[in-house]
Image (cartoon, rainbow, N blue to C red; front, side, top):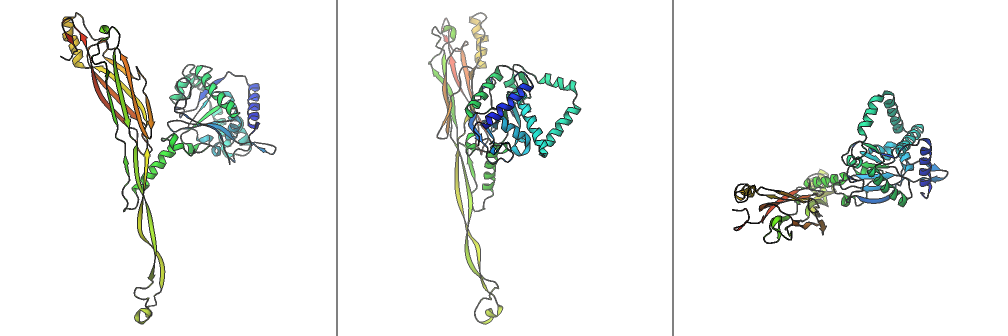
Length: 468
């Protein structure tokens, strides 16, 4: 039974902490494992999946009660694109987790992000104290460890450590680099607080802490049914895929071997328009040049076979030649018994089709060395002090953003970089690099291809393009 009880406990606890100690709002991260949730400005990354509020059932470690009412553990859950599970417990749930750190999964975290750090720390301390008093050995071990740390702490070294970990401007950036950091109120933290407040209002909870887990199986909520579709790189999904591959490869010898056939990609980069682009100084309308690109990644097909043994029942004699009803065979005293033996093995065919998403795209244009030499050696003979002005361009992501999508498990990237203002005449080499996510049975891949376009220069006597 949840109603407003969780909210009431959370608010009461926070008010008690605020009245006890008045501190500035601050944020901190634990050690490692914090990347993949927020961008460098503190916003949730676009690929993060919000699984909403979760209610954890059958949690014996959640032993907070008010009279006959059991307080059900709740929290908000996210899944990152790199396979992490992120759990945001309500304050009452966090207290109970700290009271039972191993059983609740609090000890399994690979990192944490707190946007109300003093309150989160007080909740964990309060929960651990309750757990230690009630006889939980894990909580007692944590309390003993903290006590030892306090007794042996070198205050000067601790102050130096806190100073070195304080970053008032790059909190979210450091979170994405898995650094341990803390800060007072700044733009990143305000953005994170806004996200936390929004979920708290929707869930009718008070939360203070993001707990990150390397695998959903280590989190208090366990794994969602569709976790392998949401995050194919999630640890348990990758392990299950590896186990399936291993099982198929060791199947009954009569079955065909498993096969993994990655989709054959097609990709290109090319000049779109106009037919004869001019350098920007001689292009009155600043038309420039357009470069198009495209990529297509068909799905990966994984075929494997599962051996299905087929048995039959036969009748055999316990003594060779001794099951006749008369004569010598009868004297041997054999008897007929039933036995189940392998008759044959059927090979059950399974086919899995996985899409391979495009996770990165880069495109550049670079003036050829031949054209650079032509400008410096030949063109400068006609035009005094002629020299190159800009020999390379970062097209994607510099001048345009990549457009990628998947449909029917085929993934695409396509688009144009328009009105590129080339300042030097000559032949430009075009380069396209495509990176993919891989699938549960394959690793990510990188492909590259090249193209070219020519930018002309109108000389006094004739039209030159730097190719001669």
